[in-house]
Image: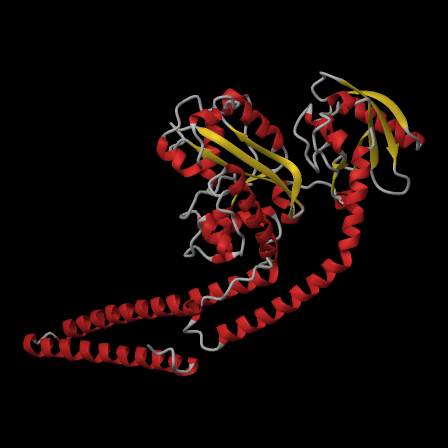
Length: 474
């Protein structure tokens, strides 16, 4: 109604109205009480009545003024700040909701103009960089394909014994023990004692060491060579004679992240920066919405490391629930009894997921629901899911305020993330969308001064009314 007036004039009118209403309440209370006191002769009681009427009246007007400012100033400012942070740090190009900020005067249009101008400049720079690096990318892809075809399994390991690189052959060898995981400790796959003895010998001699190393389960032996990298940090493990493990038709490209070579010594999870954490993002599709009686029919999971999704490190599997799938559930996710009749059961899938998520923060949208299925059957799996948990519902509340919508679709719209219609309500499709949300939100958290996982958990716990935080207090 007053949006055509200047911002300062509106502020003046609001406070002038508050002052006038307060004076009116006080005068009205005094007049009423004085009139009653003249009739009764009790002046003291009259003044007490006047004070009570005035106090409650002023409280009511103050509450109304607070609500007015909260709805038309505080919330729009929070929305505008989140919108600008989304543009600046998540790279999202979403139009500003003019109606939500209409009472902020010229602030919203000015902020939108700046973000649009900067966004255009950023896009121009990005296109220039993309053109300049296109040839380098093609050469890298050719080199990757060439290395993958070399008939030897190579694993590059950093000084903390974390996997930095593995090729297609090594991926198959690692997968025979546990799902391959970038940044994982190599002792999750190879015998720690044998590896340590060979590593110590290599360090003492400074030369390549040939050794037979059992896998971490003691079920197979690998002929291996440990090779130092000269002045570079870390070392190379070469596994010989692994061709028998490799499916000739399998596509297993080179997977690497050379920034892990400079990875600092591991800290406690709550002290680790958000960007240095390893995340496993997952989602499930189920027979219904009651974890104590329903069952999982599909599980999708993928890994995020150093703020980006790791290609080829994923679980995407149907699950046999051991019971009929209700037609109402099939309408949502499209999975029927015929599709899952030869699928593994949830116990075996859960064990694989436990291996896949080892040493990582588990991320989910509405995590209490998905985690309830894992916790319910963890004893049958013979494992414990004690990973730190990050819920993107709570993460959204931290960044966009508790009053915003926190459905996965709403968050994706806010961050300009598109979920293809055919992938919505599939476990992997929703897991990918959640992972993209996570990758976009990490720099936004950093911009708000939320650096470590402990900082983030402290913030998410402030929104306990919205959803329970599943982390054990540090």
